[in-house]
Image (tube, rainbow, N blue to C red; front, side, top):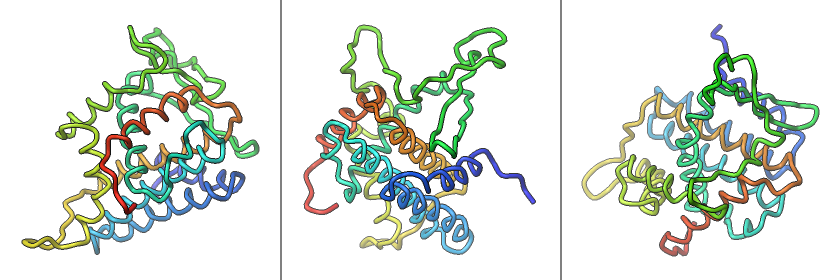
Length: 255
């Protein structure tokens, strides 16, 4: 029997830990993980539905983040609509942009899941910061999401414009608005024919695994938001960035 990957271990930990958090977040965690399990089963028999399930799994993970923000009553979190595909993909897009900028710092890290206290903590080896011999010594923030992201010459109100622009450019979109619109419409392109062709997925198992990795990261973020009654610095800084992206999207009567 194959040994579980690190991602599998975190997913299993999230499923166990979620039983001790608010029901509205627990259900989204369970649903997200279930979508990816079913996606794996469908991979060899119906690639379009496997892709569809993975997309739904990502969206449910973003819903878990929205629900956690609502539960902790972050300022302006009420502006996030848990039923809106575009709002969910704005969150996913922002997390993708930030994760790219944090890769040098988080090239190696260890998650610690405390089931008794319903917590997830983060240990970052000092070698990530260029400290010689730092693999054996780790930095552990009191709260993983209580770190302020800054850039030289910019104040604490910085809302990640450069990271969002770099993400859109790297994926060959004119701007983050067009990227989020495309991601929010991705499920429709899988299931419905156009005037000239049948729907077809060209996704790969590796791409589905990337989606699962992003979803597990979002679910972990949701738990980290819930575990502190404090309004965490990273979350307070990221929320205006998410709302700014949503504000750039065209209005729609549907989700």
